[in-house]
Amino acid sequence: MSIEIFGLRFELSTLQEAAEDVVKLAVNNDRSLIVTPNVDHIVNIMTDVEMKSIFEFARFRYADGMPIVWASHILPGIKPLPERVTGADLLPAICNVASKNKQRIFFLGGQSGVAKKAAINLKKLNPSLMVAGFYCPPFGFDSDSDESNKIIDLINQSDTDILFIGVGAPKQEKWAFANFQRLNVGPIIGVGAAFDFAAGNIQRAPKWIQSIGCEWIWRVLHEPRRLFRRYLKDLLMFTYIFIKELSLRVKK
Image 1 (cartoon, rainbow, N blue to C red):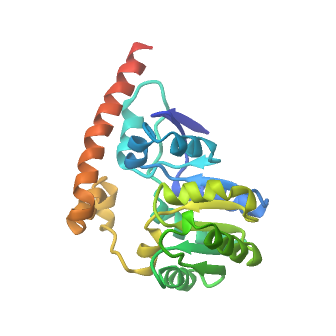
Image 2: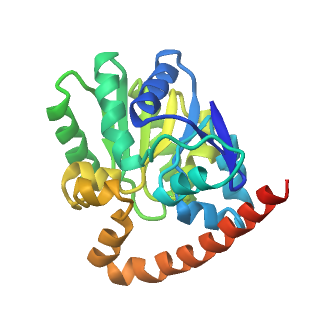
């Protein structure tokens, strides 16, 4: 089941249900794109037509942002989303389910050595996890046809069932969509900074901060120069988008 909010359909799924649904796609050899839209994405699809079309093309869309979940509880006429499903949480959850179903995982993204370290740590948590491979692409790989060909060959030769891409949005989604038909895999999931979290390079907010929807504050405090302006812009724009959506639904 799904609901439509802010111009996109979102799955009414818990984290565990999402992980199980993604692995089912892998078991059935069903090549699919999985995305986890957050507030920044909602803001950007208002002007990025390509990004919006890719998010609409995706098989599953999981809400990676408490404001989206909160909005689903406030806006009239829709069933509320049960919880936030982040890329950072989806990565280990899928690996856990995939390890029980003998599905092979490929890790594409991150700085040098990060994908390998993330794979090693996730295998420690799930000894039965089958790692098909890992690769950290160079900067600009998405606009380099030779590098993209190399990556696609590497993935296709590794007998991959589930492909995780962690190079940040919308680059990861746009690259996956551009090469979708050439990738001989099952589900393809963009997970942003999830490799860094799994590798232990970046510390996530404590669980209690995540549970109250304030993980973004934690991230701003730890990376103020990179995130403060972006998050401030997103907060203002999302507030406008929410009010507009609320107004339209009240008028119905």
